[in-house]
Length: 156
Image (cartoon, rainbow, N blue to C red; front, top):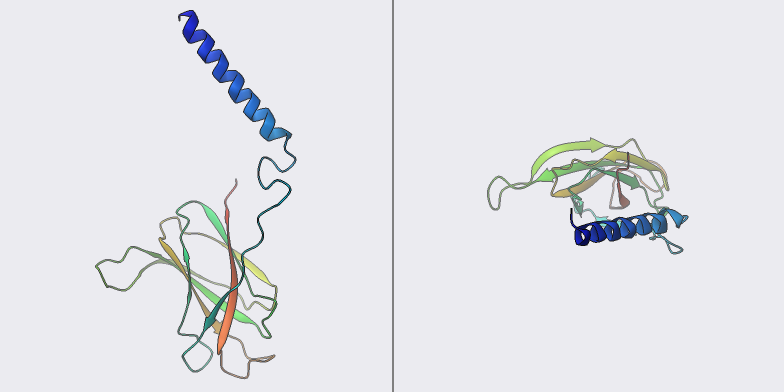
């Protein structure tokens, strides 16, 4: 190894060492800083169907990486709701229906309650559907609903 290559390699190691110490010196682990990212806002859906099962859905882009999906019923809800999440891939043909790769259904979630599931890494989109649970202001028909859907990276 010539001297020029040794100097470049040593400078690269010093740069990496400096970067690592700068990140490890951050009490937030190098992420977030003093102003962490605020939680996502609720997505609201209006149903056009009758009964407890809503015919409309909320859509998120699939992260295409190992992640968690946290579903929270917004505090504005006045009754419980059950969410069904469908992880969908590419359509088999143009204009065809979404191809469901996998799905997950939560327990009944009241206001501010959360349930977590892993994200199917093959999914291009995440469709979230809702079913109402009678009680509170729900007298047998789900007219609209909301969800706070938070995707966070899987660290492990």
